[in-house]
Image 1 (tube, rainbow, N blue to C red):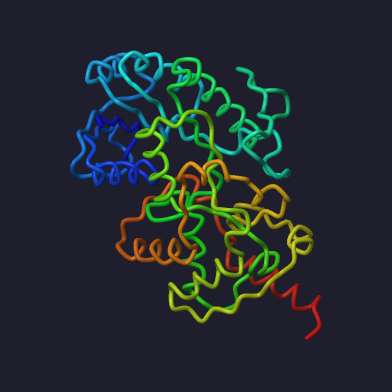
Image 2: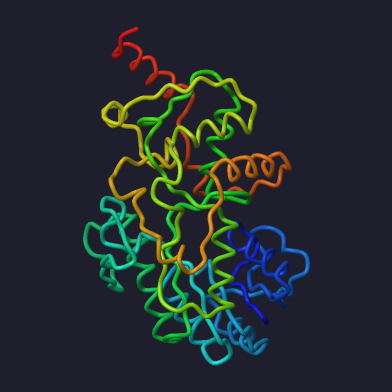
Amino acid sequence: MRLLILGGTKFLGRVLAEQALQRGHEVATFNRGRSGDDVPGVSVIRGDRTSGQDLAALADAGPWDAVVDPSGMTPAMVEDTVRALAGVAGWYVFVSTVNVYKGWPTTPLTDASPLREYTPEAPEGESGLDAYGREKVGCERAITSAFGERATILRPSVILGPHEYVGRLPWWLSRIRVGGRVLAPGKMTWKIQPIDVRDVAAFALECAERHLTGSYNVAAPIGHATFGEFLAACRKATGSTAELVWVDDPFLRKHGVKEWTELPIWRDYDGTWHVDASRAHAAGLTYRPIEETVADTWRWLQTGAVVSSERSAELGISTEREAAILTAWDGKTPS
């Protein structure tokens, strides 16, 4: 298969390129060359998705049996891209997000859950979370308008694994490696369902190869792991003797701890880790143990090939603030 990946140097895009080559496909990547090194073996096409001239040149380099797009962020960007490629690409796989659903992250989700309403203009008082989901809805509509039944929409929840630039798992690994008393959020039995980037990439390529149409939630099964198992895997991978101090959700909220950022992937809403992805599992999505994802990410971190981003700079609680909260917790709980 002649495959085009829009991006191809960071996290999911990079893993897509590596796996596509391993599967014997002829792979081209389209990017600006500013975010990481190119995967050896791909045909590199430099260009900017906001440039009509660059998109025209990309179309001239076709035809493509399939396009996989993990980098489309705004409706305008995606509209321009699909307009240029609709006539020269047989299939389009777009990586969207569960944030397109109205109920995310407070309500349990299925593939049939209602989507957010898309409007070109931001509604008054719209949050950043809502804006991200609304814009992704617009991206999805642009793709289905141009490609119709020749498209697959993937809606992942939390993706972890090697090459992660957001920094959620790397932050936990780094913090636990330092040792000492670690602020562990909520309770150790809290069920989570992140999925490994390599499993997402494999399913995206399956969709392109088998022409799986429609939309799919992409996540590990509900209850796939617990937060306790996740942090225990971080201790094991790093060889740390850190002490995990479990602090309950109301206490964390009382002290203003920012969910999702100060303590990455901690968010105690009912729907955060209740994403039904059974349709994708039935279609071939596989998932590996959380321990494997954690261990492989730690090995990757040891290579020094870390990719940082503005988002990673927002993550994590300071040493001083963590210590202050733990001291307050000690005063609240009986010895």
